[in-house]
Amino acid sequence: MKQYIVDAFTDRLFSGNPAAVCVADSFPNDDIMQSIAAENNLSETAFVVKNGEIYRLRWFTPKGEIDFCGHATLAAAFVLFSFYEKDSRYMTFDTAKGRFQVSRRGVLIEMDFPAYGLEHVEITDRMIDALGAIPIAAYRDRDIMFVLRDEDEVRGLQPYLELLSQLDCACVAVTAKGSGYDCVSRVFAPRYGIAEDPVTGSTHCMIAPYWCRRLGKDSITAFQASKRTGVINCTISGDMVKVSGKAVLFSVSDIMV
Image (cartoon, rainbow, N blue to C red; front, side):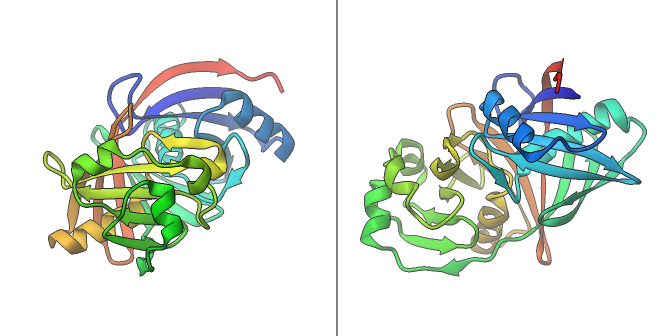
């Protein structure tokens, strides 16, 4: 089984979000996939298996399988377009969240994802204690998104990860209007063993609809202000979000399992 390490949502090594992509003839058993993900100790390890004209795709964090990951989908598409489907412009992934259409558009890889809902929720003392800040609004779907006052508050936030892990959600996002970009965000997922995720495609299925609505735009350019940083291009199309970005290969290896 070949394993590729790819930095996603960037065109520079050692930035963006690194993901492992394992390309196999068939999925190893779940325990093996989980052990590989734990050994890699990256936010996600993606496993890809071709099935006719489509590719089956699964994602594992160091602590367990998840139902959706954007940056590892970008990494998987980058690997397949670069090494397995060099003449293809489009491909389909079959996942736990349904089928995703992915296309190659110049140097960008564009992914069609379902938009998250924006259920407005009450801000509780527990949320404030976990964030170490008082948000101006909060929204829930699979993840919880907090809107903060400004970009500086997003960048300087120091949340209490133990308390964040107790919130009922997969990821916790904080966001504010940006200066050089339409919005600036950070994402935390301590429940899955990820203190701060470097760049998060899936949560932008929630961030993008919010900011497109607020700014009166169909498309935005989002900046994730983690230590590694990353840029996510998002376009709203009905109940879908087109998420696109660049990627760069770090390494290739064989896994002997």
